[in-house]
Image (cartoon, rainbow, N blue to C red; front, top):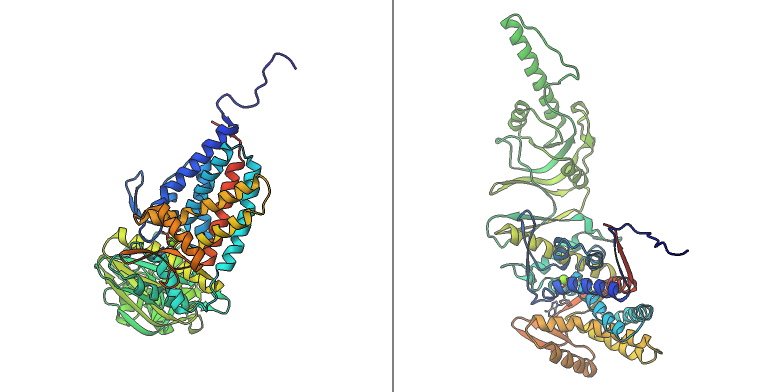
Length: 518
Ligand code: ADP
Ligand code: MG
């Protein structure tokens, strides 16, 4: 082959190779992790994110921030995925995972400068991650994970988040109570927990509803607002005058004929209404329409009726055991569901219906209220994290000390193990330990404490006392045993953070060629 150059890529595609590719990927990954660093821990700050359409979100939640940031760089995108998989797997620890991933990349960059080959770094990181997981097992507290510990887990995940004037310890108790409600022999049924955030009334009330909450209003003003021991029916058909599938026209030639037609229609409606009334139903949900005149009859008879969306109908069916019915004539007792109470409430412009004490489901709803949409949304995210960590802790029964103590212990363990590892891989293993120091260091920085001093103090305390974290308690920040001050995290949150951060970092380090099509 001589002379002629050979083009295999289109002219518009861009290609970066070797060190350039590595360093630009690493830089992008680090930048993403850096973006969430200041939100970590009880003194983490919030971020305000504005979408292109002008919507504003104020949040402290790592995964939410990264998701909203609309990140395009493929390597940066991988760090976003770290946070997302962390969120999917365990629900919390997203900032921690992203920050560790970013620091694994920063350490890798140094190693590459020292001519440590990417493959060696990857091997060393995997080795270190394995040691880290063992170290986490050792950190698992040998205690019974009871309600007090669960409340501590919940509170640890909530301190520093937007809970407004709702005190975290009261919220933590509500969260534990909620999770306990759906705990069974097969584990926690997390899907049975709903959170309903209601804007309005700067109330500090958060209630646990034993059932579901739907945003629907009764079809008629005169309907009852509360029904106890309710028979519940769900019907998927219009309640009104039958309309044919074909267009038909009647020609009416006299007033008598017109009256007869109206009478026929009225009696048909009355008959339909009567069938509903006779069935013995107390509360009727329909996914279709109900004629106003039928609604008026139902109201007269003390029946409560709602038009709901398909999703709402499914929830009602799940909670009350009602079977969905396709024809009015089929309404019968055996298809009814039951609930202890169905009640309607109005909050500002919103009408809500509460279906409580349903016969078939243990579905519960955390009903939260607060002043503004922003506050409610962030509280929603905070409670979701808290519900997830309590679920994780209860399901596995494993918790570890928080406030950076576990990370210090892992790093210590990795450093001791590194001594026995030959060659340059040792450098990579040690670098992994250094990357974990970022968690206590960041907790320190975010409280305004000098990160280097804090780390030195922490390590010293870890040496002598065996367990030490940088604990924020009210106004003070001290090196102390996190357990004594009730700062505990589920072990699974730490495991997942190590695994997902390692996976993303090693994947990024291994890339030495980026070919981007136009
Ligand atoms: P993430 O998204 O990683 O969950 P957070 O902002 O929720 O980030 O911070 C979690 C970290 O804060 C954990 O390491 C946890 O142990 C720590 N933490 C929670 N409460 C305290 C506290 N009172 N003092 C010090 N650290 C705490
Ligand atoms: Mg958290």
